[in-house]
Image 1: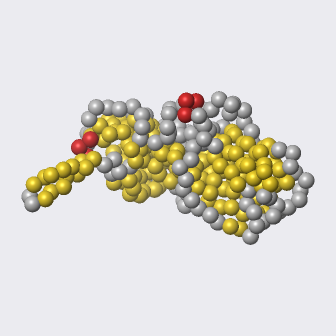
Image 2: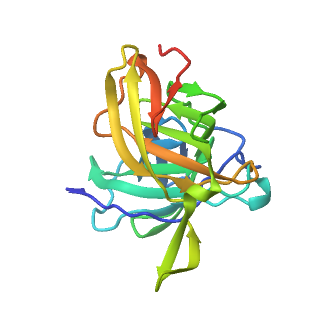
Image 3: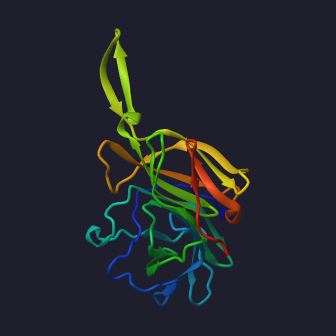
Length: 262
């Protein structure tokens, strides 16, 4: 019986970690095996299906789900320091043909290059199942540095069929709000969660996708007087026809995309 479970957890994945140099897509501990059944990665977004079962083919007891985690690397060995954004959810968990399946959704900023799992229990029995691999990224189109008349400075943009991420700068004053009491301004709040409008266009200017969302603060290079922000976009319900995408638009600023698909 398929079980659906969704959660968001502040956990880390292995990003170019010493000791994670080889790709391990299937492993066993002599009793149980774990394998990556399939995945999609672009690599800001990764969707990974993990399968766990007994080596001898004996079906797992469906009353007891295997337990494990995305493993946390040593901070000193992580390229780029901490993630500005890291979320992991198990979108689905189910048993099929005697094995256990879990479908993970992983989102990071900056983009990740390696994913590592450690499962330590299966069928109410201790297990030692470690998987780590560097996913091959899906096709993407990109854009580099640009400046716009409204003060926005684009650092980079990447768009794939299922997601995209933009890094850009806005003047700090755009994040300031003022509180007024009895006609006097008595304070101000700086926020980096700002509303934005996003669209993806084809070569004729037709809209392939459009939405409104919020920015996120993003670590990285700094420009005095500016905030460094990120915008995450997802096309899960209706994948973007990437081969048709010619440009993206953020708050009215059109950004040409480069790169071929296929």
